[in-house]
Amino acid sequence: MVVRIASALAALFVCTQVGAAELEQTTGIELNEYCSDHSASAKSVACSMYIRGFGAGIEAGDGSKEKDKRIWCFPHNLTVAQARLVIEKYMRDNPGLLNLSAGMIVSIALNSAFPCDDEMAGRVAEELRRRFLAPRN
Image (cartoon, rainbow, N blue to C red; front, side, top):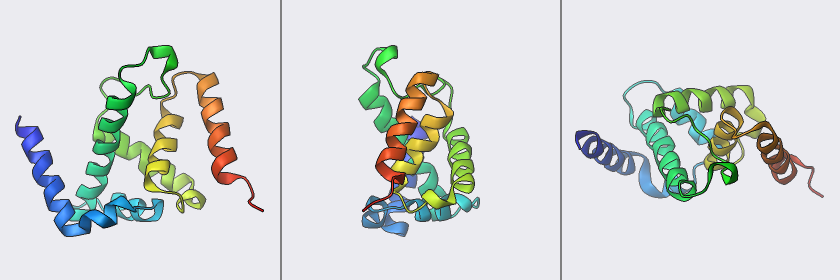
C-alpha cells in the first residue's frame, strides 16, 4: 500500500515537473536523457515511472494469454531497477535507434533481453527491423 501511494505521488510529481504532454511524446533520445540521470531528480523518476507504467501495461494486456502465445516473458521477479539497467544498456549499445519512440525502445530492449523463446525473439526482431530499420523510399 505504501509503495502504491509513493508511486502515485512520484508520478504526480513527475507530471508536474516534466509535463504530462511531454511524456506522451517521449522519444528514445529523451528517455535516454531521463535514464542517464541517476540522481533523485524529476528526470530520473520519470525514467523509472515510464518503465513501471510500460510493465504494468504489458502485464495487463498480455497477462491473460497462454504462455506459448505471449511475446513478453519477463522473469517473475524482474524489478523496475533491473529493467532500467537493461534498457539503459540497450540505448548505449544502439544509439542509432534513439530517434524511435521511447515505447518502441523499451519494447525492443525488454523483448530482446527476455524473449519467450528463440523463435519468437527472431520473429519479433525481424519484424522490428522490417518496420523501423528498413530503408524508406
